[in-house]
Length: 161
Image 1 (cartoon, rainbow, N blue to C red):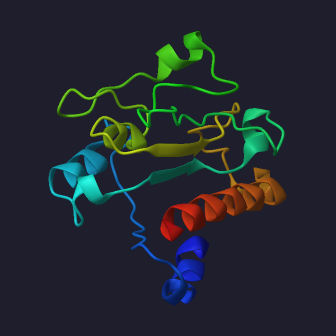
Image 2: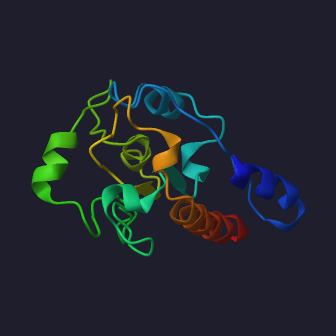
């Protein structure tokens, strides 16, 4: 949300439209993002980049704040190249399929499947993930702020053309 506030203040200095949205139903197979790509507000052909902030505290997954635990932007924009930290056996546990049969581990996969370049921040996971004990006091806010800063840099570059 903070990035949306900042970009709104900078809207007269950027060259491209920046859209912020949230999706529901990722865990059920990327239901919300699948619905969006079927009926986008802006044509997907005009969508330069989809940034996905899933879990923004790098230390929760045991990563250093400078690491990119799960950032998959392939050189060709396909999202098929994984960098740092995700082992194949871990990835296989996360496999899910969207309503239209598209691979879906995160909402960005639905966009990637439609040819949109993506970047994810998913610092997954510690032993409290999806548990009642997963509370805000466990956050490393400095690491989370660093992730948001990386996001701002990506948005700024994409918005400037």
